[in-house]
Image (cartoon, rainbow, N blue to C red):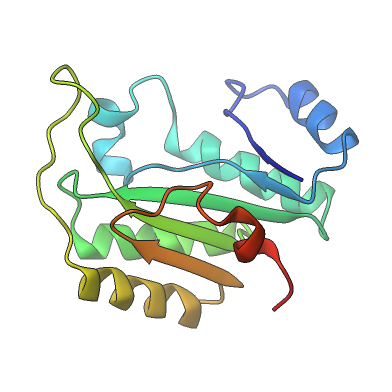
Length: 153
C-alpha cells in the first residue's frame, strides 16, 4: 500500500499515525524546485518537506519513501539536480518526474514542454545518484504505475 501525504504543516503526530498504519511506501511530492515554491507551492515549505521524508526514513528505515517533481514550470537543470541530491540526502528511494500541465487559467502557465530525451537524461542521472527506481516522462504522475515502481527489482 502506498500513501500520498501532505506535510501536515510540521507536527509529527500525524506522521506517526501514518507510519502506524504500516504502508509499504510513503509518498510526499516535492513538486518543484525551491526557487519556485513561493509561486507554485506558497502554502508549503521545501525544507519541511525534506524533513518529513528524512523523518520517515529515520523512524522506519525499511519503509520506502517516494517523491515527485513536475517539470516545465521554469526550473533550471542545476536546480532539478539539486532537488535530486536533497531527496537522496533525505533517504528518498523512489522518484517520479512528469510534465507540468496547467489545470486552469488561474494556475501557473507551462513555461516549457520537456522533450522525452530530457526526461530520459534526468532518469539516468537520478538512477546514478542512487534512487532505487525512477520513472520519468511527459505523462507520468506520482501515482503512475505505482505498483511497478515499488515492485521487485
